[in-house]
Image (tube, rainbow, N blue to C red):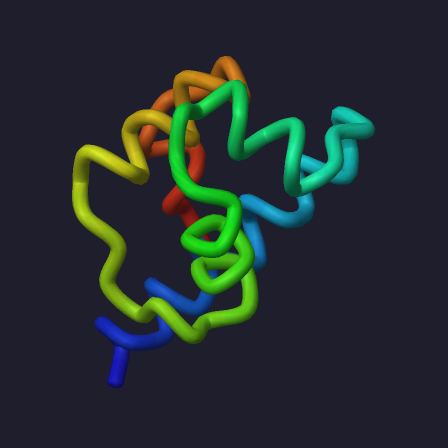
Length: 72
């Protein structure tokens, strides 16, 4: 249960930080070099376990660490 909650928080955290930085999903996807559909699915929890590489790319594009991105 805790594990799945962490992934749900990941999507919420990405969305929260993205909106705080006034980035659209499309813009963040381009900056992170990840497919737009993947980003939207991660944010909404459809993709429950994104790869470490994708999470790292998103964190880098948001200029934060992976740890900061996955914290609850």
